[in-house]
Amino acid sequence: MYQINENYQKLPGSYLFSTIGKKVAAFQEENPDKDIIRLGIGDVTQPIAPAIIEAMHKAVDEMGDAATFRGYAPDLGYEFLRSAIAENDYKARGCDISADEIFVSDGAKSDSGNIQEIFAVTNRIAVCDPVYPVYVDSNVMAGRTGTYDPKTETWSDVIYMPCTAENHFVPEFPKEVPDMIYLCLPNNPTGTTLTKDQLQLWVDYANKNGAVIIYDAAYEAYISEDNVAHSIYECEGAKTCAIELRSFSKNAGFTGVRLGFTVVPKELKCGEVSLHSMWARRHGTKFNGAPYIVQRAGEAVYSPAGKEQLAKQVAYYMNNARTIKEGLKDAGFDVYGGVNAPYIWLKTPDKMTSWEFFDYLLEKANVVGTPGSGFGPSGEGYFRLTAFGNYENTVKALERIKAL
Ligand SMILES: *Cc1c(COP(=O)(O)O)cnc(C)c1O
Image 1 (cartoon, helix red, strand yellow):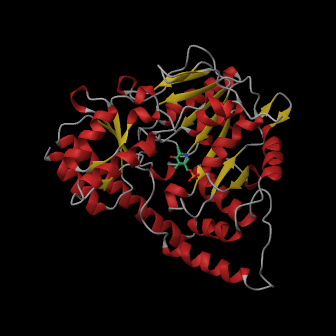
Image 2: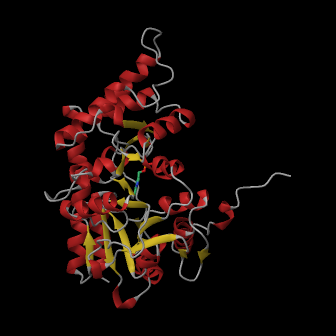
Image 3: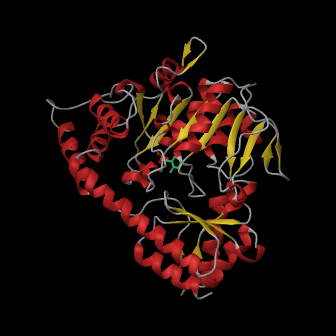
């Protein structure tokens, strides 16, 4: 009789977005005339930029001609894309990352879930709280997290680093030294980030303690302040302790197109063992490459026209972020984020729980957001609004909130 991977049985239900969906549907049914504005889910709304669409059309035509047809892509990704990434995302920022340290994938969600495979199950992981759920859940599936306590909503073998207004959303070095440290900066859900100097301290800490940092930079394109690093490799010594994950989802609207990459520097070694070789082996064994058409689309992200169009797209969302942040401030809320990320994190008023505020906002303003408690226990009493909606709706939502 076969047995299943029992670790999956340990996973608590992921009720967040399904509960939101159900509550919104029920409200709409009872109030069919109400115009609900959704500032909840972190998906983009602007269409793919013209320079990228043009590159995709061209690649589609190539696939229809025997002379230019492409089959399986190279394991690590096409050279044209990896070179464009190395030049634009790294060399241009003074980071010495070469094309063969870049592994092209179908997105940062898969990479952030898969990367734990090359590490021992006995490693202790540390995560920020609140956190993007993939980091913890993928480690639960691997059997690395111990037992779940539904009361505290925490795992016995996970080290949590609370990020709240009290510590300005800057994780503190934990009492117990972790082996693997997940950092997502700029952060989803809090919309806050660390300065380059603060990040350097984490790099130093990891090098000193023999820990590896899994650095999720999915929101890098939204950084507006000069003292914030776009890549962890801007920090000295990061190449011996950090893996960086990137995505084309938020900077170029590829949430449906699917493209991302992971950087594993050749200098990153556990004793004598190269993590680069391990990830190359894993990638080559379990992944057959991102589509040619999509990799050409990715290349166009770095073309002059692509860059210009995407800068406008990011500016559009960040104008929404400003609108939300200023609007909430005017209405008397305590608000965070929204400067280097498309998320606004607010403190719920009058000591409401995250879900109480969700219901209140839905019923009184017909605006949907995301309860902070859904991202971890330290998210309780907070609430996330996204800047990924359209401008008109964002303005309307804020007018309603101000009128409460
Ligand atoms: C959106 C997001 C990603 C991107 O995932 P893709 O699979 O590339 O679409 C990665 N990490 C975080 C924290 C995100 O919010």
